Image 1: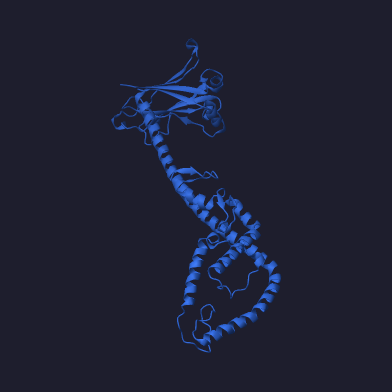
Image 2: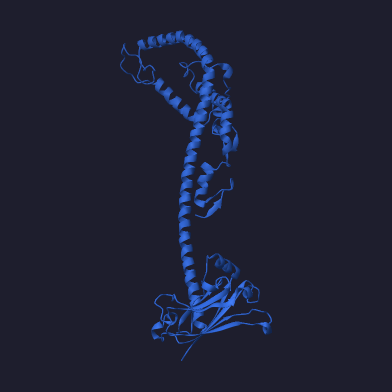
Length: 405
């Protein structure tokens, strides 16, 4: 099932199909003419063979005629007089036969054996009853063997009748040959063209069937690969979620959120596509409260278009059952100044004091509490965009969770 390349046409195929492709389909394989047994020595690419057959019809007919003449001469040499009942062949077209062993191919060997067996039967005929009303057998129109003086008279009469009929056959054949010669050539040419088209059609049907099978196999492999890719993507997302969960658990209440591609998210917030983005979840400690940061890069409500808005949302955690609700403590939010000179950094820091009566600090009933708590006017956008708070297209926000007790 390995994919290999055809050495002739460079098409990619499965290894178990390459032999069939080269034998039947490949248009660049050098193949002999189908008239090679009759003497045609032409060898061409398969795609050029149809043109050769159409252009060499007369040549191929001459080759067949020569073979027929050799067959006739061979039969005459093997069994003289065996063809006396057949029309005479013009001597000008006969091919010289020096010896039977030199001019007769394997096909003529079979013919010689058949003729010899026929001569043996004629030399030792089986007596059969003679009927005056029926002197012709039903097999191929030849007279059945008879015996006695009547047999001798019958043979002489048959020879006399054939001698009288032969001139008329020869005369009519010469006239009909002149009339039919042109039409016969056209008919033969059309026959070759039709046969060539049929062969091409069969070859193309077989090739189409093989290609459809290959397409089905490729589709099956593609579907399998798509399933594998989907499964890998799902596992990758689970792994990323697990890593984020682990980072959030081990931050020990201090979480640093890097907002990369800040300008992209800022434009989306301005046109209203993505007005708010949320950080990955994190915990106040390993078994503590689960939270996330929400940032409205273009502000919210009355601060829209003027300030950066930052909020904290509580989320459903694994250990909410053992925690104290509502949350009681402090939350410190900071926008980090990324100035390379440490002495010139001026972080923007705000501290939130929990208010137990607000829904934002109650135990969440949904994966993320819809109510958040924070600042709508945390930092003016004009200052944010023209300072070192955004560096390398990244904004950094830090949250520090300090529960009481």
